[in-house]
Amino acid sequence: MSAPTIRTRHTAAAADAVERARDAATRESWTEAYELLHAHDRHPSRGLTADDLSVLADAAWWSGHLDESVTARLRAHAAFLAADDHRGAGLASWWLHYEYAGLGRPAAAAGWLHRARHHLADLPDCPEQCFLAWTDAEEAEAHGDHAAALAAVHRMTGLALASGSPDLLALSRQAESRVLLAAGRRAEGLARLDDAMCAVTAGELSGMFTGWLYCLALTQCMEAADFARAVEWTNAAMEWCAPPWTGHPPPDGPDSPDGPDGPAAARDPGNPASLPMTVPSGENPFRGVCRAHRVEVLDLLGAWALAEAEARQACREVPVDCLESAAAAYYAAGDVQRRQGRLDAAAVSYGHAHELGRIPQPGLALLRLAQGRADAAVAGVELALACRGAPDHDVLGRARLLAARTEVALAVRDVTGAAGAAAELDALAGDGAGAVPLLRALADTAVGSVALARKGSDALLPLRRALAGWLELRVPYEAAQVRMLLAAADRAAGDEEGARLELGAARAAFERLGAVPDARRAAALLTGGSRRRLPGGLTAREAEVLRLVAEGGTNKDIARALVISEHTVARHLNNIFAKLGVGSRASATAYAYAHGLV
Image (cartoon, rainbow, N blue to C red):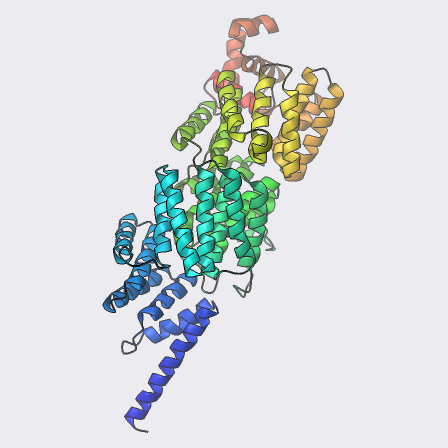
């Protein structure tokens, strides 16, 4: 066979491989497309067009080869530029900006964004300019300029409509939703989001934009405290992420025979440095991100064992450019462990979340409170509130900090500080038709707690509203906590039977959830504490002294109440501080509240 004939056959085979790769990309069979184009590209004599290099970049990203994705995108940009194709070069530049930003390289990202503007600025209207308008809207929103952000979004929508692209139109609807929500136009913002998600759930969008919009929508729903939508979109997202994207079950998942704390867990030490830096070939790179959102939802719904297992799995699945999702999963796992009384495990989880860039508040403050470290709890939650500033996009984040601030302040008998936090939370939640159910339940809980601390008769109404809200949302742990407060309010009002009913329901809920410390506290209150073993190795007399300290008594007050000398009170306090590992009356008071001694 002659050499020209062999070369002709090789050329035909190469062309066929590229055609098959293009077909695979059209079918969104990204692993197949990557393998074909990667093999073809290894031969220097076989060139790829700018469009084919763009496909290789997309396929490499979906297959978890992030560095190769950037390299292919750089080559695609150069090829577009060589062909004087500024639309192609502009789009490649914008994607490089997006990928570099995700990889934590802001300078490179800014440079490529500038290039994208340069390529596309003087062109007639084109679909590629949608991405610049989207970026303009995000930048304006970051500076609090809602008018400029809305103008950029409207330009994006016009470009998307002219292009006829369902992907770009859905993305523009999502962008408009975010701007409207940030501007306080909640009803309009959620309506735009629903419009965008219709296209997602109907299967009208490409895989990239489907995953993108699920991630954006889930974040928006949680930040806006729209729990019902978060549950709905989380379930839909995980269904979309499931096979046939991957042909094998997730290792060590919730169905693993090892269970969340067995040998499988031992193989995953929980060290962020050991997390995989790429998504295994053939898997959906959005899975870990969507699973991290699912963990937050499962946590609220009280499915704690599954939430912790899903958190561990999410940390294994997230790609390197989405490690904030792993941080969120670690944080949610810490919340579960803290409420189960696994305080050391919770501290480790919060630490990992911090290593990955998340401020682990208010969970860490509540952990310190449970450990009797009241000063650390107060400092942590106040610093987090100061750093977060105005609610901005993340309404739920600030609401949770305010709820924790109320709880911590009450534990150290700062009723004035607690009342201030509860009042801000109450205003944030809204009233009547404009109330946000999740925020309203948080606010009613906080307001009722403050009223109870003031020994007023007006605690029952907000607490009963809070209980109704949590039950309607199907959030069992918070509902059980409110029942504990209601029991105290009932007893203060002389309704002992009502108090026992609330304590019994709370105890049953805590036991179902695995909230061991809370279940013990409820059981102790039901039995009057007579047969309870006191925490920290305290004697009955030391517990009496501690209760009086927590109620604000001085050594002289306590000596008079117990008919003992002030010297004896001081000796008891020294023993209490030593046994509990605390160094102040405030810390001892926090310990007493956290362990149901008051």
